[in-house]
Length: 194
Image (cartoon, rainbow, N blue to C red; front, side, top):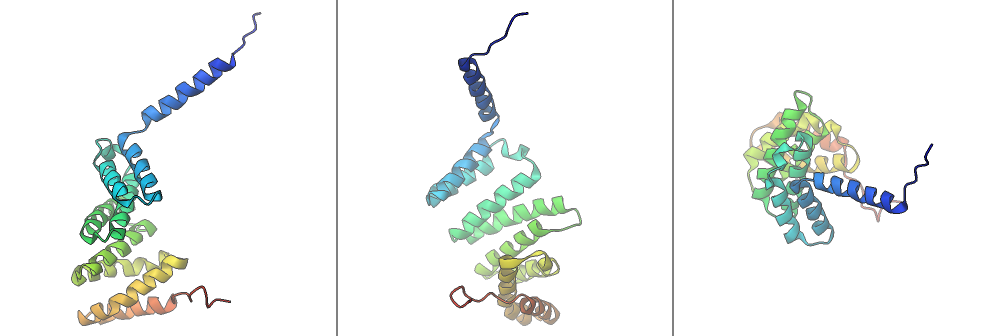
């Protein structure tokens, strides 16, 4: 019986080949998105914007699972919002919302609710109140899925929409928004907490 010995060099070469195979499987969209996140972390927002866009337009993006595509589009929408590009954010939010509606298939959850909240913010920033009210109306029955800071943020969003909803003659919806807002008061600033 012969003994079989593997040299350290052979093991190192095997690991290198496996690692190269994993990187070869990474698609262009994944690579660009990873670079986008790195640029964002480095506070190079202009480059992050460019790389995120390229990530969404890479040929392999359409082959990604729907959940991953939706999340990537949602992340890019948030970047657009940070840049003050409300029209771009709105477009991306509508796209990710459509994907989440497909995924939800009658059982909407937190991902769908987050997108509706973000869309209502983008619409309000553009003074598109009638469309924003439609988004808020869809969000209201889902608001209970939010917790903690997100719940407080949605309560504040509802408080900000109440005057517009009321002036649109939607008194019952305004009451629903106020009820939620009162059930989820904004947290006290940290310097006041004991």
